[in-house]
Picture 1 (tube, rainbow, N blue to C red):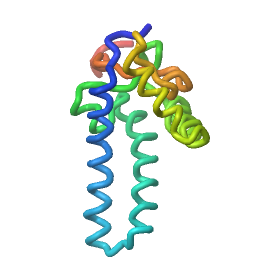
Picture 2: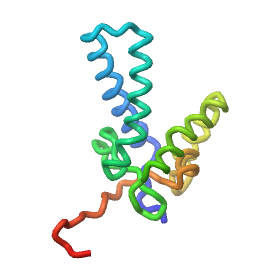
Picture 3: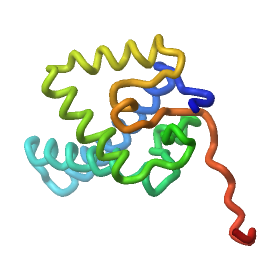
Amino acid sequence: MVERPAGFWIRLAANILDGLLISGTVFILGAMIGFDGTTRDGVDGLLNLLYGLLLPVFWYGYTVGKRLCGIRIVMLDGSNPGIGAMLLRVVVAGFVYLITLGIAVIVSAFMVAFRKDKRSIHDMLAKTYVTYQKPEEINPYQEA
């Protein structure tokens, strides 16, 4: 059940923040280390992939940009995304976007803007959605 879905503009803001974080960091480190443009682009791409793939798995569906915007990725059942879901969401959807020459990206943007549940193509593939709902607080002292 989709609860409190995040719309187009907040998701775009979170993606811009994430892009600035990764690309800015790579640019600064690359300049300090002396990477040429091609190497910097390769490192940037790899870090963006790993960041988008792994951080939500280990941080309750958040990336830094999503956390700053108060949104996160969750599974349709409300649970946190696992590595399988994130592989579908990032890698498989990225391939779909690539082979459609970006047309699927435009379709996804319209889906997030106009669908009631605000789910895009990559959300459909991974059975996820983006929400304002915070993760459930876990009490380490509570018995199971």
